[in-house]
Length: 118
Length: 118
Image 1: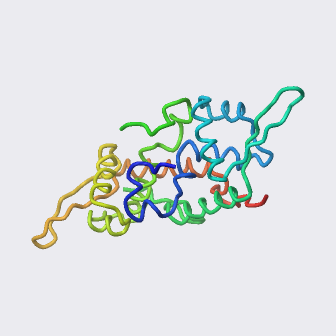
Image 2: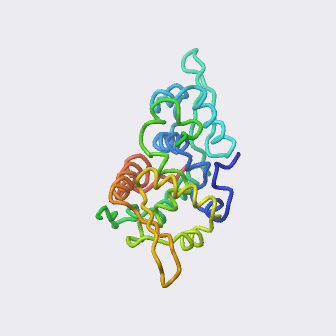
Image 3: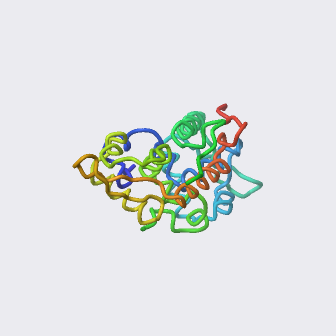
């Protein structure tokens, strides 16, 4: 995967918040899949996130290449359906990502309110 | 600001998690500035995040263009220093971003543990 601009230089580029997960559309897809242990169909994800086929395919492909998401073909009656769900390692990596966010972002640590003054 | 690839299509592109804030390096910069009400010097940010001058400048410029960060020149003794700090609207927008994250990302809502099983 190509690094997004700016992330190639220095520690912040190699540090927390893996771009594979943190990328905005990918994060939205992963949130959908984390909340659906049985997985979601392509068409369902597409509708829920209001994405084009192309955009959704590209991001699901990258998530599958990275081992976070698995793809299963199945039949609903006679109709073929492609189902996407989190892998075990994917769930663990997502959980670690959430812990990184909590540790970094003011206001996300439990019991700490963000300072919205000034 | 140019939209990142994939964000141009559909609702997920125009919805929550503003790319101005969510961009990985920008988020790391904003976390530093949110935690420093008095602001941080360029050199200090550069060291803490281990970024190059170029990368840090570009992202601070975008955050200033977006009205999230203000730039102040001051003298420390006879030495000029450029200081960056959150604006009032910047703090409010960051707080809204944190609320969006909480609402979207499983495991960030208070009192809900992420499901790391399977």
